[in-house]
Length: 307
Image (tube, rainbow, N blue to C red):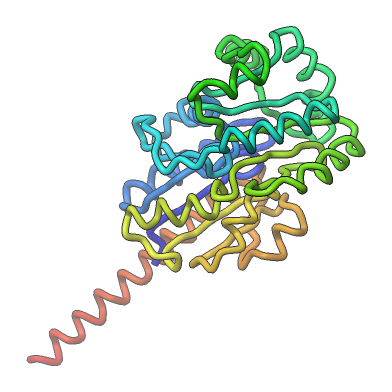
């Protein structure tokens, strides 16, 4: 019986318009009402993930930064696996060599070692064209984007960030030019103690080797006394592989998932635009109800046998 439902956010819980559908909202609430844990397992930082949950009036625990930090329903962080500053310095040096913008996630949320104009130029020339090419939506409105920019914590260069005690959860970047991102990937793989994954052909996410969606999910499940066989995990992209390749009760790929993701999963769900997450939840609840009816019938039969 499934006791924990873990869902990726972009391309999975969110539809292509960047929203959680009404059907999915109702399904998640019904799941929680039945006592089954629901957790979002995302590459987003806490603020960006919570923004979508708040818009849907949903509340749950979250694994953010691709497994680097887990947050309870009140926003308290635990199970933190940050990048050692020595490793972060090597990563940032490689980024500089390739002219890559360092999109850094820390306890402050989105963090930058450049100025605001450089950040805006990065989104205009790299992120937005890449996202548009993929047919995805990260910011639904310019207001959402402006709010994100207003909350960025700026440091004056990498030494300023590396010299303070602020933990670094993740360093990522996006190149519209896929040849540039591939060259960066080749160079990054020479650094030890890190986990590098991509959610698309245009990006790269780097965390500590212990900061992976799969590792974080199992740690979280242990705190709830939930076994791997009682977990359902669903996702669509490369940074979901660490949890979808685990020996869980159910591993589900969205219909819009990459072929690599589909190959490791036990189930293919409808796409994110066809309420795939809601479909899986409804199926779980139906199976649980059937199991409960069988159990009740069995108990009733035992009672009659004693007459």
